[in-house]
Length: 372
Image (cartoon, rainbow, N blue to C red; front, side, top):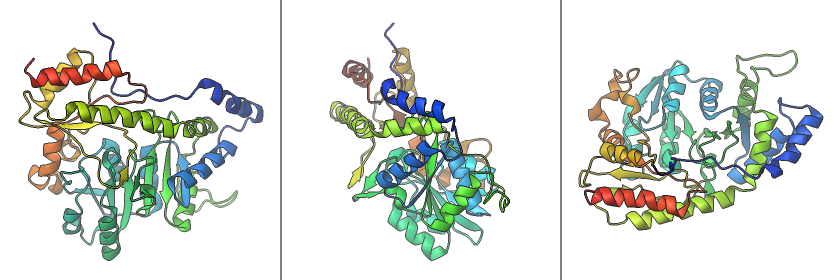
């Protein structure tokens, strides 16, 4: 039995680089509450991600929940069904009603042509997702939002360090949220961040992540405890020093897949959009009807060979039990998203994926294409 090939493997920097920071934590005993490493990481992220305001938090879902709360949203949220479950769960936990609209076939991001028709007097925001790190149609979405008087929140969990036309994608919308989970292109073990466009929104986020406290004697809002620890911030500071190398290594894996899989009928890697500098966090392919076997059979065939793959995102959020009865969840309303959910398969990608292991993945797909 061959060794398993995992769908991803978290990058960890050399432990020796982290030890001096841990020693400092042990010396100062400052473990949380906006400590020095927390402040340093926020400062470096503001510069790298090209945003004026950023707040570190405990994870990506909490980031989205906090934005919904701090922004005072109510009623309906226009959003995508093609995402990780945290996106829609955050909307629902905020006592808001998700209204699903379809995605575009080229990048599987929310289709701006479908957004406007879904906006009603009850709509308070658009929650869009930069799926696999590919930027949404940010100019069109922001223009719709300004004209219709609704807020824009970008779930940018996949999009750390991604730029479009030379500009970081975190600068679009009223808010953008990040995940620093272990599986992401940049991780702090667990963690996340919120970028806010205005100082007022940033101030509201700052209060909400600290129980709603404004000062020692003032608590004007109901908040939560979402502060990032000094340990996670220290990990993030060391990880940042390696992010460019991690991105290059991921890009090499991506490039090799594209070259090797080109020309196989029914295997279509999702394209990298024009003018985008990606982070190569995922490598999704669409397994079409002209491939020799179905997506699910290919998924099972790879598993038999100790190769992990992931049907990411399947099932579609609109088809989950808690959402499928919504008026917007019907398959006829979401044909592109439903088709993508039935065809998508993410292949293993991470910086330390050995060439021989990648060859195993490639050959397994080629063999399946030959009927083997």
